[in-house]
Image 1 (spheres, rainbow, N blue to C red):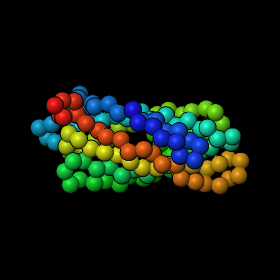
Image 2: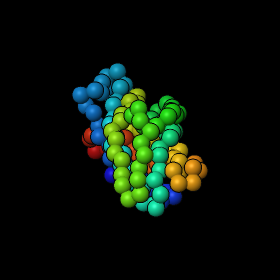
Image 3: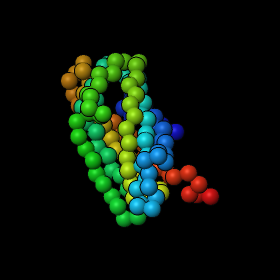
Image 4: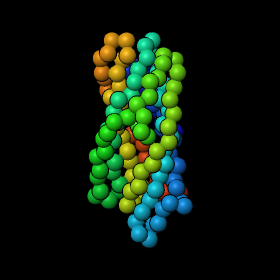
Length: 128
């Protein structure tokens, strides 16, 4: 698990290799990740957008951005957290994701960027 605090918001990421959805012969490696967003500020926030940079150990690089996460733009009260699970497929056994969220301070209505810590996606036994 990796975690990072950015502007009063703690982001924790756990990664899981999805062997049932992967096909190494066809260079398809599926990973799931669980993200917990903990609002340690004294105001409510709303997650508006996400932006990801995804890289595998070959030359493949992807950039993904869009509204909210998993179809929602959650409101996270002060002192509370929101958790979701999503996934990513890459063409090699090893990859990395990093990104950021755009959130809104619901008290001041101002928007700001929250960094998502870089995390590695590694198929089991690949580094042995």
